[in-house]
Image 1: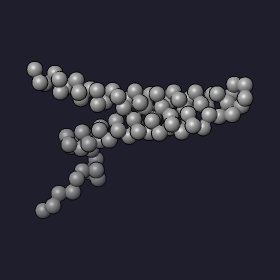
Image 2: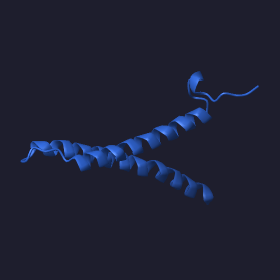
Image 3: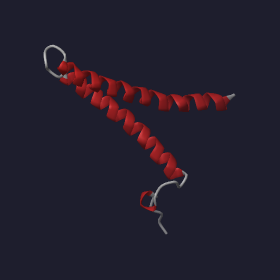
Image 4: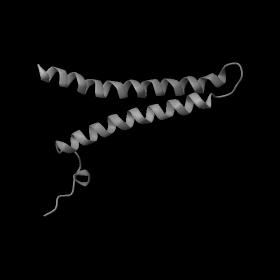
Length: 85
């Protein structure tokens, strides 16, 4: 009974940052294309917030993938942890 619950939590840990990055991208897109509307000004607050959300989501997913691959030895030798002799 515990394994499905843990898998659900693990999926949520990846879906939430993915949705955050998606919302950030859409906010940046909306802020950029708002300048072509009537007033001609870009919405800097929405753009910066979208950029931060996008970078946080992508960084989390990228870091999770990197450390998972590092644990399973799927990375190049320069990214493998140094082992003391």
